[in-house]
Image 1 (cartoon, rainbow, N blue to C red):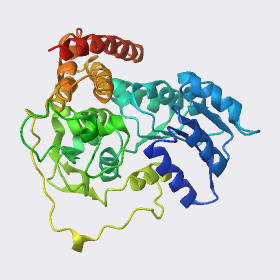
Image 2: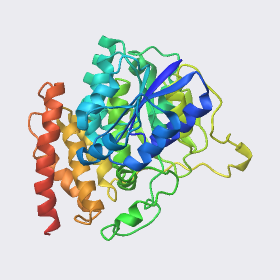
Image 3: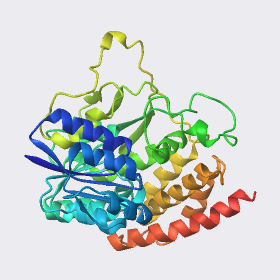
Image 4: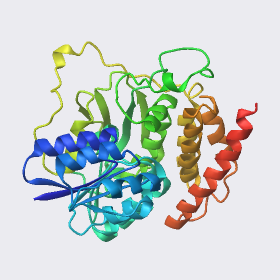
Length: 391
């Protein structure tokens, strides 16, 4: 019996994970579900899978959940406390962390210190202090398996290489990007609306990650995540814009051999693989039909039109608190954009201002320091967003 906890169960990753668990059969049980604030959707999931534990992050929604939860289902505390408690449940074998943003940092650390098998779809903690989190995982004998399709592809390509030996084995990592909804266009992006940014051509994702895909910040965050997951210099990570989203990423070994992972663009495949690793099970995803592939394109990223990617790569090169500051500033800027309080082009402008204010890039990063940097950068980003908006 495999017992799984899903953090972020009402989001797209969580919904697909529940579908995968149902397909995997009777040997799998959903032990706990946590959502942000969608009580109605969460209660429908509770009715379907009957978990032992449930919670929501939002305090007001938690009161509603506590009143409506079925008898026999324990409601854990709201906020980060509840997420961390659920992530470290002694009965849990697997923790799927698919919450959005840096709020996932504490539950990820809790799952690591509880020695869990972690399916990780929440990249921001790995951006903030991924190297330190991987050291904690080694110390506590936890295993982190990436869920996002591109880091998952790289993880799959590196099967058979012992952790710690990736840098010596690899010449390059090819990190593919769909390009989002605006890559093939021309001209200014200043008038892009939230509705336009949320129309991704390939993937069905949550609002924050969809906007990140539109700015190419998502690819910058993934580059830092990959740098930390596999202990690689950022110089070995090469971003390729690949509009078809069939090649999900690849690696080039030092002998010139290239391995890549291909499949139809369906998140159910990497989600299920992260849950069942090291085994593979029949997937809900449609098999790839090579005879229907007319072409596979690979383009160089346009750093001038999409400056978020270059800002992320520069933060990775400089290190210290900069990756944590980058992630936090981007979260604030995206929230402002989605609320109609910042232009699309204001997102990189805010991030750039926050990074320019960073100090102590050579200082030794700590887990606590990363959390402090996140809080500082959020306030700085809020102030910067007000200044950028007044231009």
